[in-house]
Image (cartoon, rainbow, N blue to C red):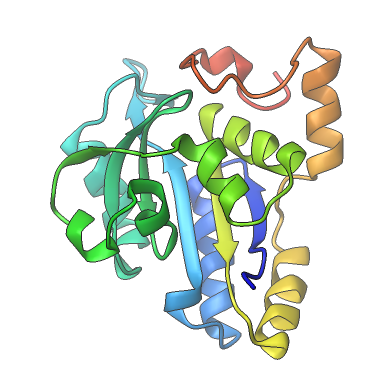
Length: 197
């Protein structure tokens, strides 16, 4: 039986990277960690925005920022989310192929989309929608998959103090603003919709 991954959303990649580093320092193996993020781009004023198309420079920023230290880095187009970079065990699930086949292979299409893949990991429909929407709006996910009870307990403890987004509060903010669930077919690149905005 597959163990549901411990999953947390972060407002930005730097916070997710800090959580990943804390997990590694806490003894969680690299092979148990995955990260998923929208591919960022810079606007004319130098601020980060969600890019409608993936660029090598944007991927380089994320890989150079530490995500490349994870196994199986892949750049892919996700229906309903847009271009993402993913690393770790989730890449193989997203593409339906071995993670190693993704590294350096350019942009690939995700077989089931982010929502579908998250749901296949054992996350509930509600959580899968929330986490897919988080990435769509520019956030970054950190997922830990382990059958080891001690590792799971350690990962839960580390991530509980990681500064992640509170799922209940954020999803209620979105609902109050008219969100009815993750659109698995459309691609939103409206950065004004980012998180609580």
